[in-house]
Length: 79
Image (cartoon, rainbow, N blue to C red; front, top):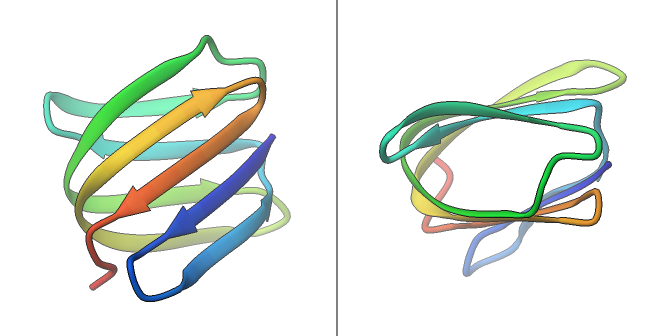
């Protein structure tokens, strides 16, 4: 699936991933390939990206949209 992480200033990440874990405002959740459509708010915490290698981004809130194997994160800021 394709993941994009964007802040108001710049694009932080764009690429193919196998799994992403998010710090939802109601608790942590993970998105895998072929996940159902979803829109959720994010709290402060780590976005863990798993693909060719594992990366972690500390986000300070935002929104995530999952639709047709495309994951779009609109982050308030990356700390």
